[in-house]
Length: 121
Image 1: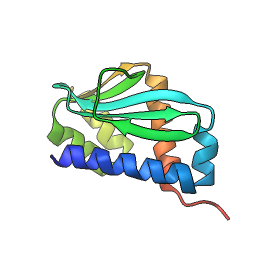
Image 2: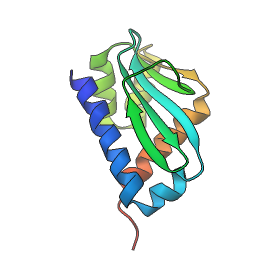
Image 3: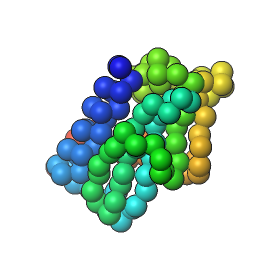
């Protein structure tokens, strides 16, 4: 439940950033990609970037790349921590892996980082 709530909150934050954060809007401007964050038993959310717009869905049927956690508790803890160290540790212990092209996951990570920063005035 906490994992699903955290993903929904992330989706809302990205949607708001797509409207209010100039740097984020520039970064996602011409990109069309679908990124899933999910568990091995297919619980999660797909984030859809489509030429400057951001939406999300609980459907996990179509995506270009996915972060796959061993379980919801691990996913919640790693995402809440929000550090590369937490992600690397989860991957090293077999609790996190990537499906699809890792490039898209790195792009998504960069997008989230930009979305969380305030506009430079």
